[in-house]
Image (cartoon, rainbow, N blue to C red; front, side, top):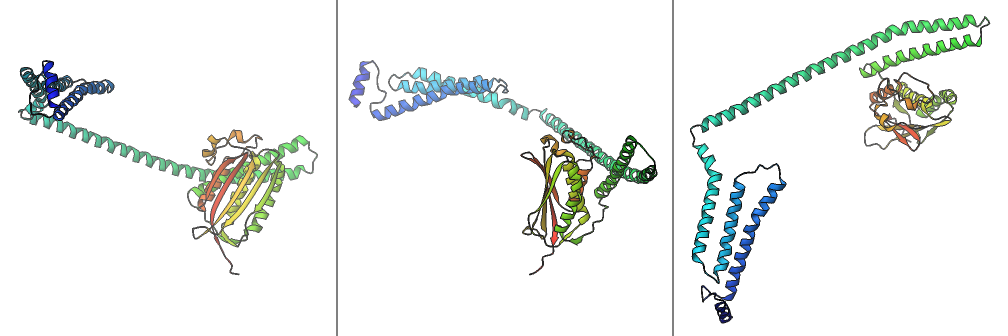
Length: 401
């Protein structure tokens, strides 16, 4: 094989530099040099692509210098492969010298300016200036943070003051309005009693009924405002009592049947689990149930249905049992309105097709009642039904059998 390579390359006018090299060693050097040359030649292309795609990178002189160095290095290795069969010592020497000079110039371009700046007599002054500027920026940032914190504290104090003024105003105005409204209602009753002995027209009777109805509505608004203020300020005193909830529920729902019939609603009660005597704030629970049923009467489809479902979960992981009840009515509420449904004085116009009106405090009071009893309330649309779900922790008096 060695003789064949020697005779073949000699016939081409080429010569092997070392007669003692094995053919495999020759091809190893040739392959390695060619691959190194290819790798060096590809680096400038890669650098050009990175700079072109990363347009945020500024163009610097070091890029062409580095590219020139990699090209010279690739040519050096390619020359070594060529010299295996056609030695060209002068060309190789000059090429190595050019590569070395390019490398030295590239390194000098990278390292010389920082090194000169480091030993420059102006370097400490420059560093001190930069450090002073950073310290000034830090101090300015701290001043801004302190200023914003102070503004935030003042705004919080102002909001608390306004909230106290609002509560005082509601309490005062409610007390001041309750007495004259009660007197007006009493006067309306006396007027109706006096006029009952006289012949009056149907129109006059309608005016008296309207006057009484609106007066009662205003009285309810004042009472709701007072109750909302008491619940918000935690002034309301809760009286727990032992109740047989099944009997209470039947009584409460039955008392609202007249309202439901007037609103063309079929009101039904379903007790899903047996009840043991419970320690419960009965007044608050009755108010929650009443407001939810009246809300369904006002805003439900007509004719429609109102379903009240009540159950007791005695297997709760907490020490208390969980009283869960659903109040459902036919209809729907726009999803965008659901988060604000329990806000004070907020009314969904689209959910009041019968123009029954209201104070806008009913559901706000319900939520305050539920929260005062450490419970939760949610509302959702369920395939043509609006469902309010209330969960209340209660103490069950379990009777050993």
